[in-house]
Amino acid sequence: MFIFAVIAIVILLPIIVMIMLYNGLIGLKNRVDATLSGIDVQLKRRYDLIPNLVETVKGYAAHEK
Image 1: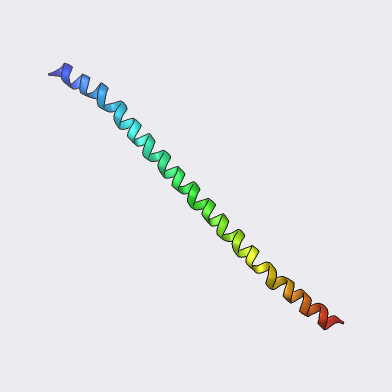
Image 2 (image 1 turned 30 degrees about the vertical axis):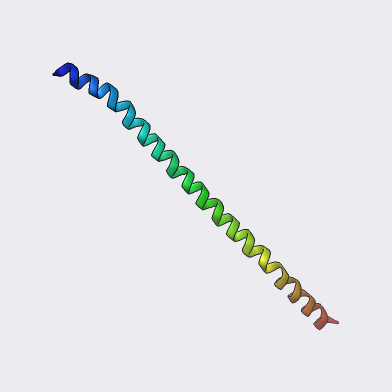
């Protein structure tokens, strides 16, 4: 019975460790994807604000004339 328990531990322990490592890596990948998505949103928001800034500067330049 003791030998069976040792064999089970030797077989199951690496499998459990591999599953935990895989899940950890998938979690990190998801965090990276979410962070990159947030960066993309901020860059798009900044890009969308450029035309408004140009119009504001044009209006102010016309006012200064």
